Image 1 (tube, rainbow, N blue to C red):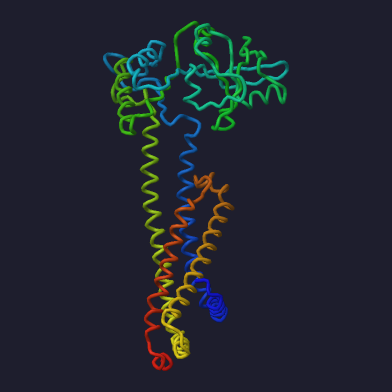
Image 2: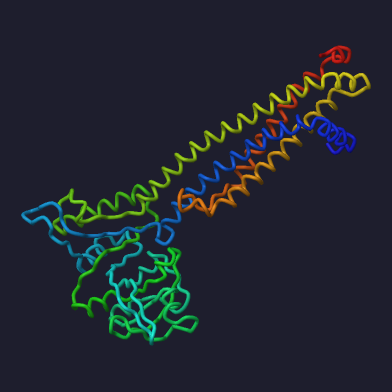
Length: 410
């Protein structure tokens, strides 16, 4: 394997037959390049779907209400459905064993002012569990807690970009801001993987907003985090059960999709999993076809090469070369070309994915396209083994020919 003379002969053969060597290498490199690009694109699509839900917990459910579009039990169409604290408490008590996190939401647009700086921001009134449902990352201070809810405290947790807007580089934690005419204490500053819109948002206790604006018990939405130990199908079934029971409780027609909906991340996750599985099957089929085409290409070229070198092998045998040394030389040359070409195809494919990756997300929904090194290395190993076999079989046949017959070969 490490015979210096043999390696010299191999490189001399490659140099002497440059076109043949380039064609052999091109077949392998092109196959690996296509394989890399195909799986990179599939991976990029998967990354896009994952990023779409990156700022929410994967076990999250949203219970939302609007107006009815169907009459039900003598009640008219167009009736506004309103969730209340009693509905929130009902969900808590009814599904305690199946819920990991729970929070209500009340949506508001408030002016937040500090000294001469002011702007209008989205403010969500929530419960403490909302931090885990929204995957809020605390940069400074703390999030809302149960004491804030009990005492209906005027405290606020602001996004990183609100701090930048109002305070610049100055500290904001512990400062008071004017929120729609009321003084609120900043107890925390957060960041969010959801991007700028999520980081220009603020959170306050749900009880505080209910007290300040009508002293009512209204809520806009109920967010749940189901037990993460539930299977996908069990989580979907749980979501449908919650929806059925909430429709009965709120007197909503079973088919009135506009009045109440339950958005279940389990359904989205299942859809993405099925989609990605189907996509990888298609890509795998196409990629396998590419590899087969590469293998056939190598085999055809090696058969031609062996036939072309039959006289050379005859001379070698006449000079005392053993069949094993001839086979070994051909196989080593084949494996060398296949390995180098495969590495070149892999490198080029990775570079192309890296170069165009950022430009694909907006139009084609492909984010950070990349390919697992294990998949590509595995494909390259398959081609190398194929190159070995492609060189071994015809070389073994040629090595059996008697020197006199080899020298007569055309």
